[in-house]
Image 1 (spheres, protein in one colour):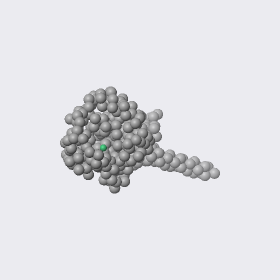
Image 2 (cartoon, helix red, strand yellow):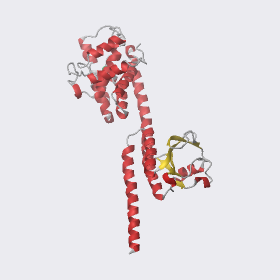
Image 3 (tube, rainbow, N blue to C red):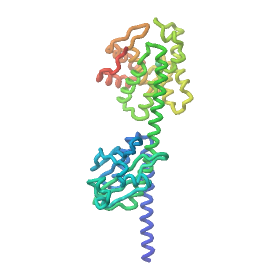
Image 4 (cartoon, rainbow, N blue to C red):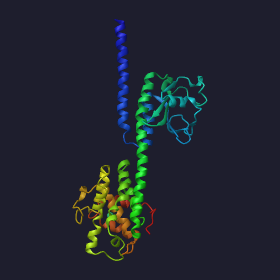
Length: 368
Ligand SMILES: [Fe+2]
């Protein structure tokens, strides 16, 4: 009978450990999705501290060039300037074997000199699909308890999910860098066709991002606003040069020609399905809030928020820049014009954010 009871207790304990590990995996997988590298690391140490009840946790990254592990982020009593070269076996062993290591009394091991000021320690590799990211270190459990094999499993669960997410985020950042580089080259090629528009794109991007931040846009959405702003006039590639460079007011037919650029821009990018929000922002960046004079007949919230922001940023830069057919307006005069068009051409909420930004800043970019 006793044997039966013991078996049952052991099974219940195993099941509860398995449940804890699975629920942690589930929570962590959702938590890390689409976060930046810094945010993933930050959540990783927080989760390790909460789940394992440790006083200290640190994420170490492997520098591919120098082959040294450096502290990316830490909590508790960890020296952030600490780096580990390959002779710091305790950390490197876990990376080489891809297995976790735990020490209950590090002072009694040959590794004590590498990590001073810590009693007990557990290290776990952070592995992506293709590359080794680094390691996570936790130290000193509350109440001076030992590390158990269940703790090792929990730390492995955190690090395996985080490893894949960090690797994804790294690839994403790399691709984004390449993409932005290509976009900037494209924009330069466009601006080279008309000396009047030189610098326009970078300034509009700066203004749009400032407004976006004040409207609490973050992460992915802010990134889309940036790409949309950089590409907003890409459709002008199809506008005849003589129209873009004309020295006097445009005729009716030339205006019709130039008004095609939002639609053409959307068509050019149309193949890139993952750019859907960017495409819509570009297509609708000349729509008017009240719908009067909208190129595509949209009004109010039908116009995507990113396009409403871009519209204000674009107009402000256009007003404060010289054009072949009119001189630039003074900054205060341009601000008054944007205010005047709040509720008609522009979304009042976007204008409010624009005013908050423009009144609190001296512009970094000065119109030519
Ligand atoms: Fe435009």
